[in-house]
Amino acid sequence: MKASGHVTGEEKGRIMLFALSTCVWCRKTRALLDQLGVAYEYVYVDVLAGAERDRVLAEMARWNPQESFPTLVIDDERAILGFKEGEIREALG
Amino acid sequence: MAGVTPLDAQAVEILHQRLKREADSSGYYLNPDHEFARELVRGLLVNEHRYGYWACPCRLAAGDRARDLDIICPCDYRDADIGEFGACYCALYVSQEVANGRKQATAVPERRPALPSGTKAEKTVASKPWGALPLPVWRCKVCGYLCGRERPPDVCPICKAKKERFERFI
Image (tube, rainbow over all chains, first blue to last red):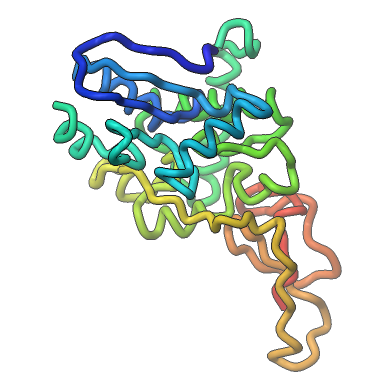
């Protein structure tokens, strides 16, 4: 399982998805982003280890101190926590 | 998951069937969306391979059994979330209404405290609220099953949680 990647698509700002590779809600979120056809970055935190995991978690904690997944950060301005289909569609649709 | 875990569809299917059987016989319901449930079961098997136990597929495990104890499936929060939201956090387990298709399972907010319960000081047992009992009462933190005996059972007869998930209740 690749720990992180970039999906090409329509540029709708800087979209970063913090996810777990085993989480079905994270998978649904990725499927929705793919369906919306937007460009985004993703990282599977459970696949990371050591300092790299700590660094990514620290970045994610700025938006979601509870460290729950999925956490979708848009333009370094706002975050959508959990698979909230309506909110994601509204923000990126 | 190729190259990471030797999981095949058959192993997922077998565990899914087993969990469904156990749920059916003890008053719980697995998510009726079989594809969805199977993906979660696959996550459990991935985590078993990684950590040696069924850490919740939708939570980040620490990889340390004592710290992750409360999120080993079925987690300590399952019953409360099913009662309030119709599904547990990952939605592997759902309420009867959701199981029967009368309601849709949705994402559930995280109710796990920031500090995992395993790291907190053990709760003090109320001092004999009902007078001297002949035996201590043990409570299963997963399903709430209570029993009066010298030691907790090895496995909860209701939800199959292991002995380590019991707390002294009275």
